[in-house]
Image 1: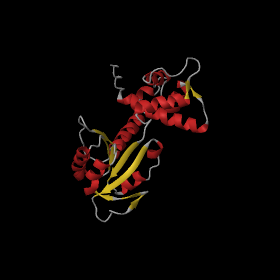
Image 2 (image 1 turned 90 degrees about the vertical axis):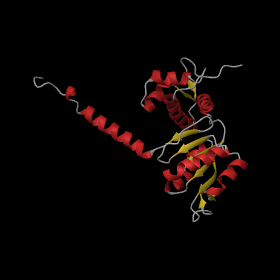
Image 3 (image 1 turned 30 degrees about the horizontal axis):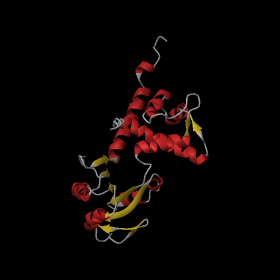
Image 4 (image 1 turned 30 degrees about the vertical axis):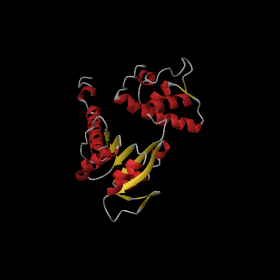
Amino acid sequence: MAKPRAAIPAATVSRLTLYLRELQQMERSGTSHVRSGWLAERLGLNDSQVRRDLSCLGQVGQRGVGYRVHELTAAIQRVLGTDRSWNVILVGIGNLGRALSKYRGFDQQGFRLVAAFDSDPEKVGDQVGTLSIKDLNELEPFVVSQPVDLAILAVPASEALSVAAKLQRAGVSGILNFAPIVIPSNESLTVQPVDLALELQRLAYSVVQSKQESHDPKDLPDEDG
């Protein structure tokens, strides 16, 4: 039996998604080859870091030549699992849900939005993109009867745990959670949180740190100098 490939660190996976975005742009512009140094410069990384990350893909690239853009793109997609199509449902059609439903990047990366659900009777039957909003009570029967892989959760925190439980019972294996509450992952369900307020807090911290470092007294000349 073949030995399973070791899990790639989360930080490396995050960088692979950035490389993929740049490579796809290069493909669209007709570029055929790329070097690790170009990706490093483009993304504010160092060359050795990029080469270490890409080594997780196996035998890719040629010494002195670099990487074929198409082959490197395909290798990253295989590792990320985006070399196939994923059926996705959206739960919660408030302002955020509506904005997410219009995001074209999902389809471009192989994530096909197949249904939208909400618990508000006044929204049921409304159109969101190309989809007609379904009643939340239809969620489990729909997922059981349709090939659904992933769910985007954009409901209030008070509803998130109960909806996540419904999704798991129906067989959904992954949730992208925008609700401001922790939904734990388990053996049959992987949850990826997206907390926009938390990201802004991290950004604010980085800005404060940057300003403090730019005014570090150690960087100032001595009075005698």
